Amino acid sequence: MIQSAEQLEAAGAELIVLCTNTMHLCSLLSLKHFNPVLHIAEATGSKIAEAG
Image 1 (cartoon, rainbow, N blue to C red):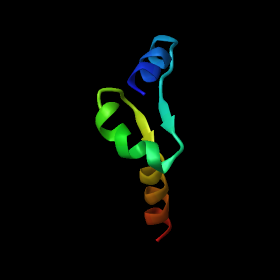
Image 2 (image 1 turned 45 degrees about the vertical axis):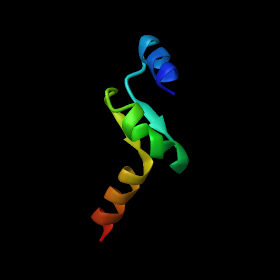
Image 3 (image 1 turned 30 degrees about the vertical axis):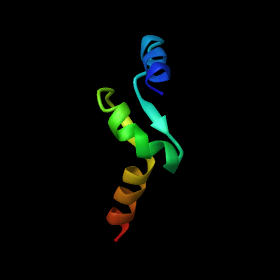
């Protein structure tokens, strides 16, 4: 996963988005030096909190 993220970054990616819950379990540690990494659960939780 780190190698893929590095390739995306080298190609000019400005953001990494993971769209699976399973990959988020290891992404928090392995991709922590990439910024930003959008965590789908955090984004969803923020919208739910905003909606009350």
